[in-house]
Amino acid sequence: MVQAPSGVVRQAGPRPWPLPRRIATLSVHTSPLDQPGTGDAGGMNVYVTEVARRLAEAGVETEIFTRATSSDLPHTVEMSPGVLVRHVISGPFEGLAKEDLPAQMCAFATGVLRAEAAHAPGYYDLVHSHYWISGQVGWLARERWGVPLVHSAHTLAKVKNAQLASGDRPEPLARVVGEEQVVAEADRLVANTTFEARDLIDRYGADPDLVSVVEPGVDLDRFTPGDQLAARQRLGLPERGHIVAFVGRIQPLKAPDVLLAAAAALHARDPEIARDLTVVIVGGPSGTGLDRPTALIELAASLGISHAVRFLPPQTGTALADVYRAADLVAVPSYNESFGLVALEAQACGTPVVAAAVGGLVTAVRDEISGRLVDGHDPEDWARALGGLLAEPGRRVELSRCAVRHASEFSWSRTASGLLAVYGGAVTEHRERLTARLAGEAAALGAGAITW
Ligand code: UDP
Image 1 (cartoon, helix red, strand yellow):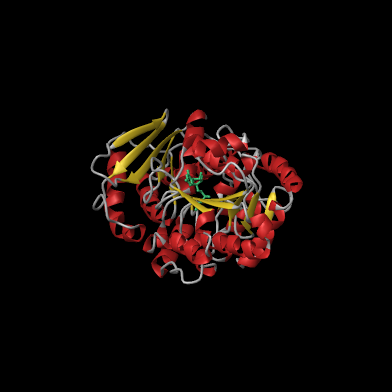
Image 2 (tube, protein in one colour):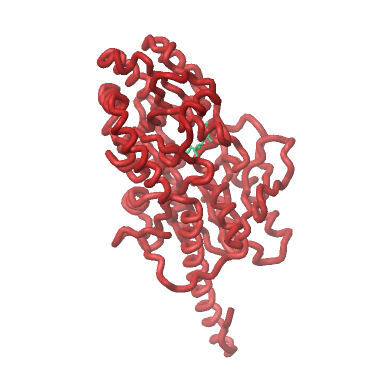
């Protein structure tokens, strides 16, 4: 349910929330049908997909608008019962980076408005936008349709720019301003953690009464503990020795280079532990990582650890769960994470996580209970944290047990329930405002009371 740190976030009260019948979800720059773990597809895609499925189970239809990135895509795809993906043609199908998309917002917004106009008025009860570019379109749709706008930022430029990897490009001013506009316009803002809620309020001036914390979840049916040896065999990974895995989009922000440097440092400081160590890197290039897609391979070679590093392309289905099961530890050294679904998934599979003590990872990982949090990105610190746990199998078993328990507290059904409370509050308030306005107009004309 909606969690509310006192004085920061609006509490979900006991009032019966009206259930929206159908919501329009905007995910302009990345499709829920894309494979996560490469390019622009990551946790947000998983979030949108999983939440839509759970909302449909609760009787709320979702239509997800996303940009068409190929001429082969049908206009609409039924992703699962009650969940429709609408491909909106806006700009060339291929060749546009996320940074180019603001120039296509007029075309995208027109596609969204036309889809609604094909139905009777009131087709959507609410718009939920994901990421600031979608928020810009949601703002327009909200005005046109007379429904509330709920916005999830997922990442915030001001936060990202404050924690940049060295040499990484800062987010442009246009994004900062675009985010500020959406924050000012949205009827409700959904934050993944209390930290994000604080950032929205302190850095973006959000009204605390309009910010709700709804934590993301993890697929507890798919990500379950399993036999480590069998998982390694299925993936063709070394059956013996330690494995530390990194899973995610390969880009400087995620700091996979810190893990490689830590592995090299571990070879120097503790050759016995490092002797049988394999670092497994899963994912594809993304963001500024696309500038030099072979950078990590080159780094492993320059550190003299190429023999101890395996690169796997983005994984799907049970293969991804197998990656977590095959690993003794999963490392999440990111400079910033709005939440860090990978950390939750690994823990649900019973693998302790060593994560940077930043953003949502502080919530996703319980320090020294389900994993270990590391301050900063010094490879020596990371080598100490990883090496210490690799040397202590008994400690890893304890952490593993607690990791499963900790992850079990985060289900997508819980996330969907939290969102429904936010939607209900937004719809109720919107109707109250409208009723008051109409009542005022009716009174001016001498008519009776307005009822819904
Ligand atoms: N992912 C995947 N296959 C991969 C790598 C990642 O399906 O090979 C998924 C992973 O399961 C997780 C998401 O991508 O759900 C990444 O989410 P996270 O919050 O960790 O990072 P983000 O991409 O949002 O920055």
